[in-house]
Image (cartoon, rainbow, N blue to C red; front, top):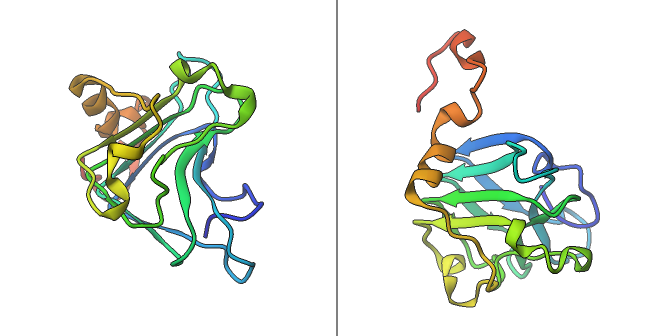
Length: 162
């Protein structure tokens, strides 16, 4: 689903997204295997509400390929939170990366992993600038209200679990 040269997957943009209980499978399809990245969040400023939030998800992929969990797409202010998820051995030890022209802006980057498990969840090799958020900040982003600040989910024909 993700990888190669294409940035046409749904985790390469500026949006508020909350993904729960889903499986993210990294693959190059029929193309030659090559390493890649799963998310690329574009966030214009530190005040921009954009973020990708994953809770209780599985990150897996084609054996033999390695991937990072995320990077900045454009602005250098990405925010990606992965909570209580399974990270398979396809995740590179550094976990996250930055393209060269964002080096020096690491303080504006929010990449968080909390409560994850699996061979790819070992934090000992992660980039030194991985961000830690307070429990309050993490819980605020994990709450459904993070993507429902206008109340649109109340119009769904079925109840939304929080």
